[in-house]
Image 1 (cartoon, one colour):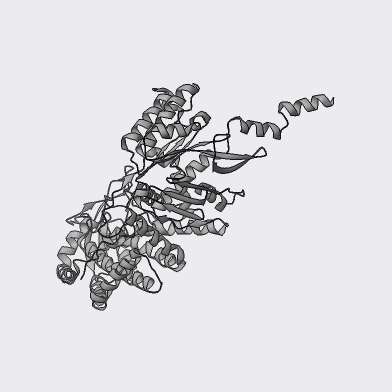
Image 2 (cartoon, rainbow, N blue to C red):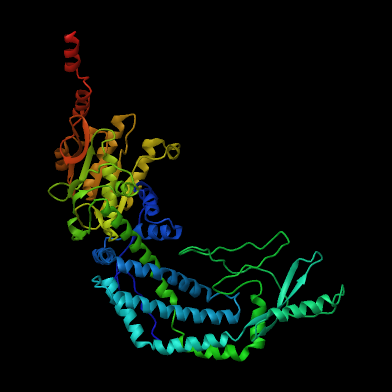
Length: 570
């Protein structure tokens, strides 16, 4: 039997991609916990998606590979339906494979679960094959999976395998009942128990009644002298599986209240009687066990573990495709990212908006969403100093850029009408710190320390997002450090959005670009105000400074000219 090759829907075969982890600050500042919870309510699935999203690579081949796979998942709802149904079987297969190594389980149950693993493997291979053959998939990832399962199905003698499974199950199922002896303590509570025999006939109600009547006819007499060896103490030893779609097991505590109870596992059969089963199976079913083992040795290379390893990847693509569909249903655009050469260090974005706003719309909130364009390139600039009024959308836009890059590099559609990207090797954020974190160094000191740590590991292929960084009560101190930070970003060659209230930071950028050698030019970006109303539009322009305040003042009639005119009327 062929062993399934290592197939991944996230990474191309023989990939040399290097992955880097997002910092805990970036995870928090990009609201990834909120986004994962919007994708699924299942905690295991949230953890799976978070793990995938927070490990990023700038390997263009890997990013394209994921984008094509996701495109198939999004285009074919039938694919998602079929693979969703498969997830439960893969979950069982994963757990069976894991518990095959359970030394606490009886020999008989190990054999039964080996049969179940092989049977589940056959069923999953068959269903994946039928699913992928019925859909016009085009991604290399799914085409690789289709070829692998087809080769296994065609070359591994599945009809013979199914017959062997049926035959060996029949042998095991000769055991119809178990006779158990239970010892009691002085208060007649169950203390320990053991297997007396395995029987090939089931107990019947009439037989049980006959034995009961015989016992009661003895009055108060108690039968003395019973001696059964190999009595085993109650001791739950195997995980109890939660009743969830794709959950992990937890260990039951050993009872301490003097009232032991039996906890069983539907996967291994491991319970307080399993130790007794081991000896009983060896003594009573030695030949049957030997026969079953001889059959299974033919399929020693079959393992459901490799197949079940696809489960997190399938979950990842299905949940994201479901969310993208919901966003599209609200009339919001999502687009497949186009991957540009790494060396060009470009981003071309049209009509992008913050994913969190789309999620709120999906959840029933009604409000307009303003989309924006921005290019990171030689012509437009790669470092943008973003200024504008309070609550003018600066933070929302800054976060939107980070989320768009993160989605694109995971192959997921991006909120917007067009998105082209030279992959980033990491995304660093520098948002205001919690007040509790600034006690020792003060805010300015803490923020400076974090910036230094970012520059220790950032490269010219990194994306830096700064949100009101270095904003202190002493504006001159913050501005001094901020200017040096921008110069350092230019020299390193990163792409960045630095939103700030320090309008002076966005002035005289031509001087900064000419005086500081570097690969990324610095540009001023502003959020707009139209007739006193915040438009949330972002565009390249010198900082507006007091013009924002003047627009607001005119809207509410508190400019000197307006007030003077009203005074003169009287």
